[in-house]
Length: 270
Image (tube, rainbow, N blue to C red; front, top):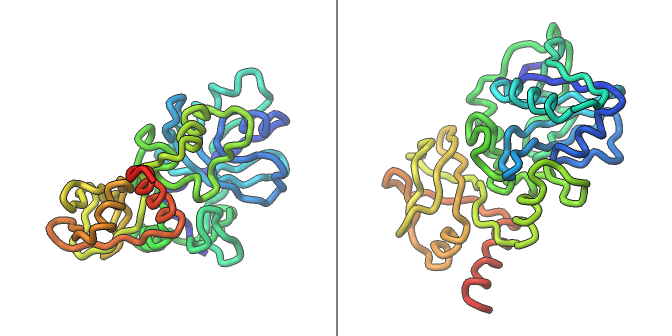
């Protein structure tokens, strides 16, 4: 077994744990059996991501797997929302997230599976480059690499596509903004996988105008936050795309192509 890099664990226990999550976070908490892992986030009131996470339902609460640089802030905010609820919230340094072939990640079947074991059994750390290669190829952005707190909306990093938002649950922090973006069906920024020989994080991708910005890279593959309405026009006109003056291509999954086609139809007045 090998440990995932840059992870911390937060354990929530107590009879009001699920009630607290129901009114604060984006993921569904109903019909959640012990041992099941879900994906979610805590948002700002303006609808931007404070931190996303994977979360395991335990017999007495939940175990939240979060980027180590986001853990203290997430814990602080959950404690603030706790009010008088009976929920204990604390870092858990007895366990570690490790790679396994016996489980799948809720964000993508292409991601390495993970489970949580005692630290003494966790083994060595996975090389950051190896983990980046896996998640980038799977099209999954990561807090700390592709964005940080209060920088992006959930749809910017495809959280809705990865099952990280339950739009039908009760009110959660930032729900009004997230739901309005979903209802209007005019999502114009997404994260897509990009291929090229000169990709560099923080560098723009151009055609006649900027189309997006590379957020993380491993070798000749990267992730980019893209204005999909602009990309649609580029693809419709078969125009070249470049990063650092070298050609690039995008992987456009069916769900993104359907969104882009809808934006194109709307713009043409059809």
